[in-house]
Length: 137
Image (cartoon, rainbow, N blue to C red):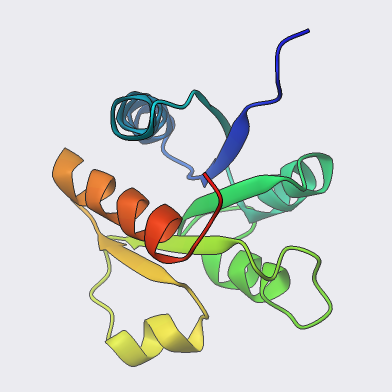
């Protein structure tokens, strides 16, 4: 039986961005860490919460801020609430909106990616999120 892979969740309403981001994450994690990653994805925050419940061993979350059917603000608020079992999962907020750093902090996102972003920005934030925050990877 194959060992369980580490999981990264992408919550993004744009399907092509979800697919591209998943490919970049899988490629980078194998190249940088020698590890296969299972990327799971949802179209909105409501679906994202359901996936987290089914995959509580998720190690990192990328989420869009503005999505129909459950936006990123509410999604982050729910997973970062004191009673949430997912509170310690690192969250990367992605948005095309221009945000003040205080807004990112208020949302309790751990990292922020301004859209459009490049491959190196994604790789850098994965590296910082997984290694700097002492996730046993």
